[in-house]
Every structure is written in structure tokens, then in C-alpha cells.
Length: 171
Length: 389
Image (cartoon, rainbow over all chains, first blue to last red; front, side):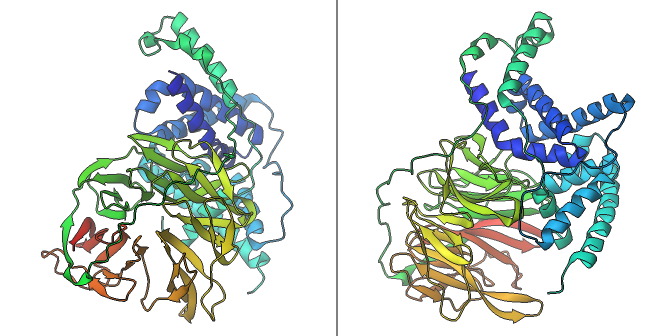
């Protein structure tokens, strides 16, 4: 039991930065991302013995994260949306860099994507999930994941290319 | 997902600015315990699973914060010198297939431990669903699906690697554990593990910041940063010497953490180190511009003398502890420090001889075991070459 608890803390501590990044990029709201990750790891603790015996803890966590996000969105249906767009992320002072402009454009582009597209894009590219694993996490068919990914990519590429053309200095 | 564009989007997602998480692992444990209690009181069928829960109250938690390991790993005795000085002419080699415990058209052996006993590889469709396979004395085991992209295996059979999302892992005695990502960084890239369980890799964060890191297979939640910010580690020898880069310079650190630049071959602006075994390291320098890219030329360093030498081959894929160099040029070639070489024969049933048929990825410390794959009929098959003197 003590071992199981230690394993839980170890797993969560190692994965936390990525879980939080995943949640934040999926929803674009820092507080919601914190809430959802907190709920996910609490649920993970409750089910740790069963889940950690299964082959893939990550798959469970990704599925849980997506479900909790959907739940939260559903609950907030009735609430007034105060933030129409992405809250401004806290930025570190860094020297100007082409890539920085690109990163910001990417986050902005994500904010304009429908939730489904946004979720599959983050799972496929940030979490490096296969088509099948993404479909399992989101709870839809692989074909659906494929088409959502394609549409999301097209939208994101367009934004990045525009940013590139207007922001890049010729090398 | 292999195009550059896709990689660029993945890299942007990994480095996009996100706020610091405000998540409390200790609270998750406390809330989770309460919820389990409620379940038990509620008499739900989970009673058998939850048996013995009362014991958890005694566990100390530190909120999940990882602390850098303060003490450098103790110096172990140097590995016993098994370098053979026998004449090399009498070497005979034979290729044999490695068994595939699971299906998949892309099955490749990627690394071998210094003794040649353990071999690690990947099997999958090539579409990010690859599973890590560990062959022990030729018997195959599939690692848990949470482990992806193995980087190395040590003489104890411990395997390390990095998942696609930038989380490092170590697999030891049948158990998968994850490596702490150093505070202030978002991802790690794990490259090597030595026989003592010292694990070397590089942490990366926003704005291209990066730092060389050491972990221990015993305590994967602790880490020690090596050198200054801007450092990177790509290899570690049995005595704990770390190799990598500091800025654009090839670099090495003693087991105590003292860093010094390695020589850059005359006439080249910079060099990078890929891996090190025994007193040898290999890496690359940028050569001529060719088409749209730069042709990279292989370099070998002797870590004892500090000498760097350009190698007259198109590329070097591995270095053995005895200095034998693995060249993945057509049928794989093993070149000894004195310049003598031997070409490894393919399995008799493999007919194809065009470039790309053979891949050789790893070599044991005595230079006698080489692992890789054969590409034939749109599929990769893993194989091992075993040689005898």
C-alpha cells in the first residue's frame, strides 16, 4: 500500500507539467486547467491500484482529462462567459525570437478551433498519441479523429504561415 | 506524423507559454482517500479492491515536489578491462533474427548493453504506436505501453527512454517509473544509462533553454543538473563521465561534475557528441553544404588523450568500449582503432543489397555484438550479429 502510494506520487509528480500543459492547451483557461488536472489526479488516486495494474496509465489519464474537461464545459454552459478569447498567458522576458511569435500565434490559433479539433490536435501532437489511442481517449471513431486532425491542422497551418510571412526576417 | 511541418507544430505545442500549474498532489491524495472511504461506507462492490486502506495514513508526502539530488554519485571502481588484445583476423560473425513477440511491420533493434546480453528495440506500424521490446539472452519481453521510444539499455537490463510528450522513463526489474522533469523545464530527452544506473539526458524549456541532467535509476524522482544552463548531455560512460555540449562546443564532465570542452577538429566551427563508451566518444562536425542541407561528418574522440579525429566514413552509428567503431554503410562495418575492419555478413536468405537494406544501431563493449534491422518487402525485421574471436 505504501508502495502504491509512493508510485502514485512519483507518477503524478513526473507527469504533472505535461498534464497541465495538455489541459491548458485544450481549454485555454489556466484556472480550468488547474481544476481539471486536480480532479483527474484525485480520481487517479482513488483508482490507482486498478489503473496502475493495467498496462497503460497514460491512456487512463488522457481519457479522464478529456472527460473532466467536457464535464466542466457542460457545467459552465449556463454561466456567463466572461472571457470570449484566450486569457493573455504570463510571459517570461525573453529575447525577441522568430519562434516566440510563432508560439503565440499557435496558442491564438488554438483558441479559435472548435473544442473537438483542439482536443485531438493536442492529443496527437503534444501527447504523441496514435490515432487509435486518441480515438479511445476522446470516445469517437478513428475516422472522426483523422478528419478533425486534418481540419485543425489546416487551420493552424494557415495561421502559422501568415505569421511567418509577416513576422519573419529574411535569412 | 513525420513531415517537418508536423514536427514543427509538435515543437510549438511543447514550447507554447503556459502558466505555472497550481495543482496539489498532496490534496489529491487526501481527497482521494476521503472518496475511497465514502465508497467503502456506501457499501459499493469495491470493498475487496479497497481492503487494507486504513494503512495509508502513515505515509509522508512532500507535496510531490522533486528535489535535485545533492550528492554526486559515488565513484565506482572502473569496469574491469575486458579489452582483448588478441589478433583480430580470426573473428567470425553470424547474423540471426530476433523473435518478434508482437506483430508490426516496423521491428527494429535499437541498442545493446555493454555485455551483449540485453537488446532493446521497437515494434509497431511506424505510426507512433510502437512498443518497446527487451530481448534478454534472445528471449523477448514487451514493456508496458506507457514506455515509448527506448534510448538505451545497461548491463543490468535497465532500459531508459523518452515518451513522445517529453517524459523520461526507466524500466527496471519489471517496473516502469518516470523521471522527474527538472523544475523550470517542460520536457526531457533521455539518452543513456550506465551500469551503476546513472541516467544522462537533457531538459528543455521555453525559449530554447536547456540543461544537462543526471538521474539515478534507484531514485527517478531526484535529479542533478550538470554544468551551466545551455548544457546538454548525450552520453555517459561506466565511470560516470558525461559527454554532450555546452553551447556549440563538444563537452565532457567528470563524475564530480567538472566540465571541460572537447577538441573541435581543425577547420570546423563546431562539433557535437552523440555517445560515449569506455574512453571513446563519437559525434559530428558540419561538412560541406550539399543540396539544401549540410553533410555531417563523423568524429571520434579519445577521452583519455583528448584527441579528436575525423573519420573517413559517411557516418558513425556507434562506438564500442574497446574503440571499435560501427559504421552503418551498406552492410554494417566494424572498424577497430588500429584501422582494421570487418564487414558483417547478412542472413543468407536476405537477397537485397541496395543501400538501406541493413540498419546497424548498437554495438557491445567488446565489439562482438551488433544489433539492427533488415528492410525487405516493406517491413523491418530485427536482427543481431554475434561474432567470435
